[in-house]
Image 1 (tube, rainbow, N blue to C red):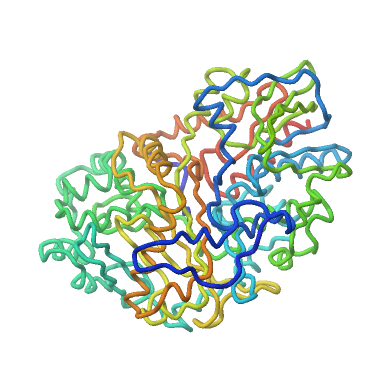
Image 2: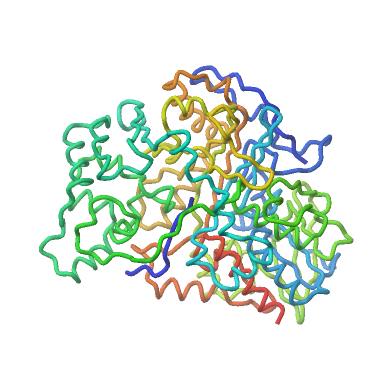
Length: 619
């Protein structure tokens, strides 16, 4: 099976957290959530970006959708509509907001309502703000960057971004590429855990690259057997043609149908300790372990042991991963809201959007031409003769409401669409359910300083078989009035990525489902303990006190994370194209948007699908 869809990278009323450390005895955790606010405060303005604790698919955001999809609850529908619009958009992520914006451009007098089941807009483009020593520190909790805009963005996507004031070249110039390795003289490293490797051990690489042939002497410091060290060293420094004797066609077929894990285990015959080290090499990048990565995809990603197999390599131009706002793609969502609801967010440029405060009281103002209603779940959408009825529930209320609109754009969770749109044809429902989203965690930990990392000499860690596979100091971006930490004495955010540790499954989809089940067995305190446990290990190694440095934590739990993407081991190009073509089909006056219907979890796809749906709906 070939892979035409190129994957690049995954790498996602409130009270601001006051400065001050939690009192956490060594390995006995008092949940830091006791210092955060997970519910709106009656005394402060509604402001979701400052909410800490459990974020992402936060508590309450999935109550009604789970009632529909899991418990098959039947709701009694109201007979009369309370409001009438030209367009209702279900889903206030980047795709839904883009759809609303383009529809308004094509029909300037249109009255539009956007609804979303979360407490903030942006979908997976989530913004988190910490207050540390009276300073606001901004980070992202999901969709993080413009991925390869020069090569991967369509003309229409570029046009929309230009209309929003986004210049990706100028944006890249705000990214301090030389800060950590150059000015701070920090490197990448590997953190081994006691549970798998017998001890907690940090190995710092001698440059800021990932482990490669040039720094493979670091393997000698790994806490694994001498046999495993030798095998790994050979894999990195002297890979051979492990498929010698096969024809070019046989090699190609093998590479397309064999997992990288099986290749290493059965063909290269690596020892188990070496396999454990390599197991999460793909987790942050792909959203699954190397058991779901083909040998061809391993070659595309530059993984060890496959360079001498005689396989054809992808020669497409690589772009730097530097087109990044401090809050990730939440700034794109905020720029769209600024256009849709004038007065909700002040300013006029991509630089000033970063520090501009959104006035959430403006979003659902009855006087708006475009209204945005949060904490609101669409539970059913029905076609009428020349209109659409949308039924919704608002969190904290028991009453079901009906809205009438000429058109509806569904930009929500694709696999939920069959439950919400009962008139959808069966073959389209089957296609929609094929989009099994990737479960994931983004833990964001605010620190008063980065001295522990300076002492250890690291800014990024690969952590095989750990609850979190990647840890790094947040991307260093200075833009507008926002300044990233200039020295290790300044407040900073640590980013941690976790993919639920399900190692096996018949397909990638089953791995994702199993990972989600595992994730749902853990409460916030457990997720927090896993994140802080890793940090505590590092701080102990540095001789620093985590409790005195800790300023806040937000864990973005995405049980339904990024869109499914074609997985070469199980999905052919033909299957992917057929499924996505079905998913995009309008259902009467209901038009389908969102990155889910593209099987592509990237900003450009979210925008592109929203624009397409708007063109259809406004025609």
